[in-house]
Structure formats: C-alpha cells, structure tokens
Image (cartoon, rainbow, N blue to C red; front, side):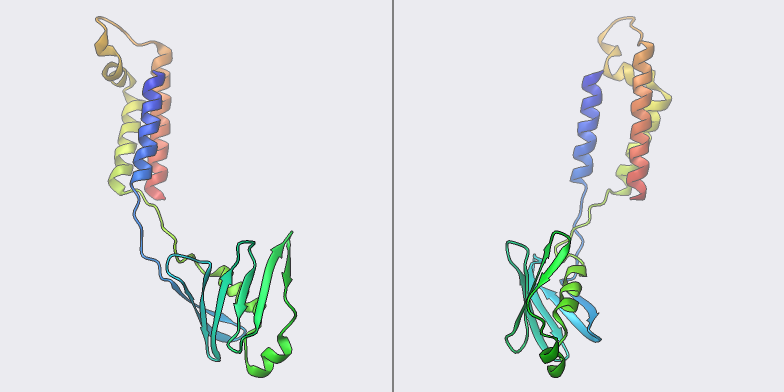
Length: 187
C-alpha cells in the first residue's frame, strides 16, 4: 500500500512538472520615472542588464555579482546603488546636475528597474484535461476504494478482502488527489 501511495505521489509530481509551457514575455517594459515616460529594455534572457530609453537620452544599467546596480547616464556619470541590511547605499547625489540636464534621478531609475516584470519569466500551467483526470481519479479513490485495492493488490490473492485501514488510506489518498486536482484546475 505504501508503494502504491508513493508511486501515485511521484507520478503526480512528474505529471505536474512535465505539463508546463512557456509563454512569451516582453523584454521591453514601459514605465514612468521622474515624471518622464521610459522604456526599460533587458538584454535577452536576463534581468541583470539592459538600457533605459527616455526623452533625454539612453541610460545603461547592470547588476554586479555583489548586487550593486550601476546606472550609466547619457553624459557618462555612473550612479550606483546597493541594498544593505534593510537600507540602501548609493553613490554621491547627482541631483543638481541631473536636474539641470533634465536627467532622471538614479533612485527613481533603480526603482523602475527593480519593479519591472522579469523578462525571462515562465509561467507553468496544468492543462485542464490533466486537472480533470486528477479530480476523477481522486473521486474514484474516495468513492470506491475497494475497486482501487483490487486493482493494486486484490488480484494477487484468491478470496482476499482489504482491511478497514487499507480502505481508509485509499479514501484519504482520493481526497488528497481531488483537492490537488481542484487546486490545479483553478491555478
């Protein structure tokens, strides 16, 4: 009985893991920062570097291995920011010169980059038919545990009957399967 339960759980996990599909996600993200409309373009397949196009020029950005975000302004100035123990450490303020040239402040750009959706994201979904099959199997296990017992063990023996505990375990497995099927259906 333990082998069957382990087999069903392993099969369910493999089934759910194998039923995924990748949906196309845009690598360009439109946002507003510092009162300007910007477009954040991530390098294909990554969220760690890219460019920001604004009304006043193109900024480039990249993350280093220690988590520091560096933003290079159109005039060559580099703004850097790092999250440290719940605080933010940033480079010397560039507000005066940035405002004179019409540039967006680094903190607003960093916020826009970090809040952009992941350009490399994939969403995993379970097809509806798989969810319905899991629900049906769960209902079968819960409503007719004796037939499930016979398919798994009963045919091995002549004139054998399942124990009450065995039937309870099959009913419990059925309830769990039905619950997982319902969750996967609505997910």
